[in-house]
Structures are given as structure tokens and as C-alpha cells.
Image 1 (cartoon, helix red, strand yellow):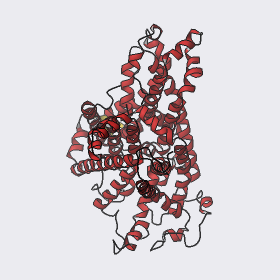
Image 2 (cartoon, one colour):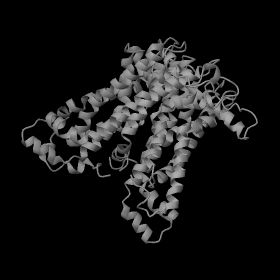
Image 3 (cartoon, chains in turn yellow, brown):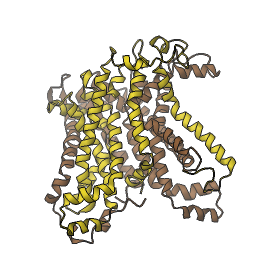
Image 4 (tube, helix red, strand yellow):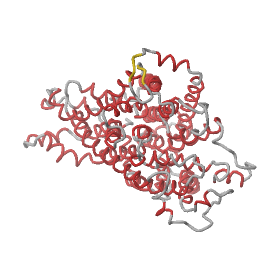
Length: 285
Length: 307
């Protein structure tokens, strides 16, 4: 990180203006989440009071974070578990399926490779939302309607393309000589992949994993039509049930949201630096 | 970026890498292929098939009706307004997102103390679920207990709380603001990645030639961002076009279809009317529009010309 001396010869005054503007930008992007956090600490009567208060008048109600798990609108604890199980399993499935495909297509030529990569691009253009009508009927027919497995498969399939694409770029950047040397030493393809390549491309894998995980964590449209039992639904769907009620328990909506958002934000912050590299490798050429 | 090299050019050298047959590749690409065929290609075909059937409200396939479902869809008096809403929704959201992100990326590429913290703040709406972000906006603009309405009355812009989500036009406006807000992080980061890939020599050369700031930006930086912009715009168009939660939460309580896009309409038909056949036909229309947009875009802008 650079300090007050900057490479584009900015004056001290310019730098201070940038810091002020930066503070404004940061505030603008954080305000909704500050509202969320403060709201989660109000009592039910206060959050619905007219006119509203900016800060909790009756002191911060941290107890909301204990009582929110037991609300009549939706079984929040189950919804959180659903979100976690579906997102983790789908991410794992993507990793298992995308890594060999990305490695092989980056390293070897074979008939049908162009068709396969084309299929991957087309998939990347689609989202479950476009196909919900088809997915709904298909899952009914396959007896997977209203199951976690259905959503794991759907999330994995629609996020596969991006993972293959990102990892493909990373594998392609590893010099072939590295592979060849290992193969001369008698290592099989699987060994070359695991022992030689994976350690070199892990930034690509991290990027792919985070993108997949976040996309599964936030998936909404398919879950809405595929999962009908309240206990099976992820938070994204469950939380919409609060909205539009006579007296919405906003403090719980916000408390649950904060709990669900924090781990993802932490994940993103850990890879903030890598994000730009990952994006340039995967998309920007 | 150096990490992205085209594989086909370098793959030629060693004969050990050629000669693979499709069968040899199958164990490696097979699982991915299976997942794509089973969960993307098959439902797409099945949806097209369903759009030509008459299906009861409990899901029983009754008979083939040819293109009747499509005739019903196009004769639907609500359709023109829905299509207009869809176009406004996509064009306004994507245009503003890209313009704001261009400026923001340019700013975040300049060095200043605390820049990393500002960049992290900009990521937050990306990490936070769209449903959750939309929900807090919906709460904040409530005319009675909404914080945003209170703020606007406190600083004297409004005399009393305004029911932003009660009528189609202001509700769409709020939804558009939310959509721009949640689209900015990804777009900004993609452009930022593009900015960092511009060689310093290019900028130095422009400065030596005496180009002013705007000149440098328009004729040196912007053309270099072409690749990043092409990808960002395409992904935004697709995401915004297919976005459901923002409009569902913010305009969902408005009766009728005056604040619906094609996407939210498909879901209303599927969830409330339980008409799988009509909703499949609508989805096929939607699907076709997405494919046409993507095809035209890929053809003219060539965002993936190196692939």
C-alpha cells in the first residue's frame, strides 16, 4: 500500500481530497448495512415506531440475536442450515467436477474440445432463473422436487462454467515443461495434476471457490420454485416471507441477515487482492 | 494479465499432448459434461417441449397444443407494458452501473492512504445477499417507519414520508437504484482489473505527447478497457435481465402487472396461477431474448475473441 508519497506525483492536497472522497464512497456503500445492524438491535415496538429513531432508544437489544431463531414466520435455524449445506455441497461438487475438466482442456487437445468449451460458454450465459419452468417439471419427474439434492445439482451445474473458465486460464499459464519433466520421471496424469499443478494454480482455485460459494449462498429464483417445505428453504427465500406482513419482525430479518452476511464478507476480504488478479485471468484479456 | 495465455498456440510443441481421443478425455471432462447436459441442456429442451403442451394446474400433461401457448402469451394485454418495463429496467440499470463503475474504478486505482479499506467497503454489497440488501432498502423507504423517509423529512426535502413502494413508477425507480447499487461492486472490480493491466508505458507516452487528462482517458485508457468493459456489460445485462428478487421484494405488493418485468411475470404465472404451460412459453420467449442479446453482443463486441 502506498502512503502519502505517490507514484503519480499527486500533491499533498490532492491526496487529502482523495481520502475525503474515499471516506464518502465507503460510507455510501456501508450505509444500508449500518441501517441493518442498528435495526437488528432495536425492540420490535421500536423498529415499527412512527416516526422511527436513528439509534436504538432502549439500548442495544443483543438478545435479538438469541430470540430470532424462534420466530413464527419461518424456521430460521433450519434455513441457515439449508443455506450452508446446499452452498458447501454445491461448491465441493463444482470443485470436483470442474478441476479435471479445466486441467484437461488446458493441457491436451482432443476431438470435441471446442464443442465442450462452447457448451461451457453457453452455460455461463444462463442462470437457473431462465430455466425454472423446465427445472421445476424435471425435478418433479425425477422425484427430486423439494430436496436439497436438487438445489445442490442446480447450483453446481450453473456455476460450473465460471469455475472451469477461471481454472482453465490458470492451468494454461503453468508452463508445459513442468508437466513434461514430471511425466518423463514416470508420473501419471493424476499425479501430475495433484502434485505439480494444483499447488501452482491455487489462487485460481480460491477465486473459483469463492465465486461459486457466494453465488450458491445468494441463489434465489430456483430455490423459490424447487423448495416448498419451509425447513428446506435457504435464507434468501425464507427472509422474503417477512416482507409485506402486517407488522414485519424487521429486527429478526436484519439480525439473521447480519449473521449470514458476515462470513461471506470475511471471505471476500481475505481474497480482496486476489480478486483483481482472478478477474483479469478469467475475463479480461 | 500474464496468467491468461491461449492454450491452443502453445499446445502444439509436444507430440505427447496431441493424439488424445475423445474417449481418453471422457474421464476428465465427463462429469462436467454430464452435469451440464442433465441440469442445463435437458431442462432447456424439456421447457421448450412443455411450452407446446397443455398442463393442468397440478402438473399433469394433458395434450399437445402446438403453438397455442405462445399465441396466448402474445395476445396477453399485459405483455406490452411488461416488455417496456423490461427494456427500461435493463437499459437504465446497466447504463448507470457502468458509468458509475468507470468513475469509481478510476478513483480506486489512484493511490491514497486507506484505499484498501475503501475498496473493501465497495465489495460489501457484492458479498451481501441481494435479497438481504433489497430488504433493508424496502424497510428504509417505508413511508411510516422507514429511516430513509425520516432522513429526507429531517433534512427538509420531504414534508412527510413518501410511499415509494406503493405505486409502480416510484417503486420501479427504487428497484433500479437497488439494482445499480448491487451491480456496482462486480463491475468496478472488473474495470479495476482492466485498468491495472494497462502498461505504465502507454500512460507515460500519452503524457509525453502532452495529452490532457480527458484526452488520455478517452483515447488511451478507455480503448484499453474494451475487453474488461465488454465482459462487465455482458454479465450485467444477463444478471439484470434475469433478476428476480429485487423486483419481487420492492414491487411485489403492487397489484396487477404494471411494475413487472418478463422475469417477475413468469414467476407470477408459475407461482400464483400455477400455469406451467404458459409460464414455460414465457420462459422460452425470455430464453430466446437472452440468447439473441448474447449472440448479437458476442458478434459485434467480441468479448471473448481470444477464446
